[in-house]
Image (cartoon, rainbow, N blue to C red; front, top):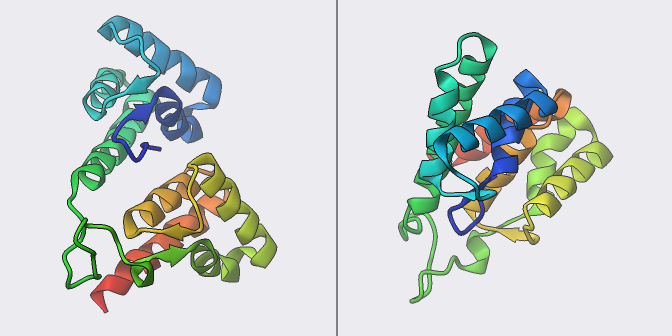
Length: 176
């Protein structure tokens, strides 16, 4: 997951690749690509993350395919982190550009999107774990909710599948 400051950790790249390749192989591939490219920092700029994934896309088979999908996700994170705050037609902002409290979303609201398929307790546990990993508080901006769903989508199994659907419902609410 990207940090709110626009960097991407090496662990985030590993997490993107791990569902297809396994954690151990993903760690090895990311570290080897970093070494080939002369990158030694665990915190990567979006450009460095894209460079690493570009390097991995040259590999044939599942590695190349997984890297291409991961590259799309990182590119999306870059767009989200560089977006200015949403226009006032989608929410109200104070003079400093901060999102007003009424335009924030609670962790409970995110949990409610996932609870019908997972059950209340499992949904609550999954959302709290992901929010904790991202160091998110209870009142989230729209961008933070998308990051939270991205973290949940990366969870293998039913949680990831349900998170994809819940994320779609969350994003679609703007079109109604």
